Image (cartoon, rainbow, N blue to C red):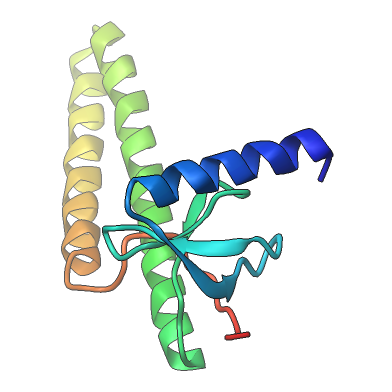
Length: 133
């Protein structure tokens, strides 16, 4: 990390602390920067510019990773839905329109099911297992 990027991270951390974040004794498992605990309760790495989930066991880590896998699938479904929508706007053949609409319905059902599973609990930030220092 260059001096200027370290300065930027320090400034970002100082700004977050001024707005109510607190410095923790945890460090980012990716870059080693001390983590901040935001007023929302989330842990945050100012260097990586991302939230970090603190897990205390392998089982908890697995549960969080599964949730993030489901979130990734949900994002992919949304992207595909938008692609189908764009194709639908141009479609003229009734059979093709019917095929696209059926695909949209299936994607929406899958999207809804995954969203229900995700919302049943667990953190909504990026998961990373870290060790307490």
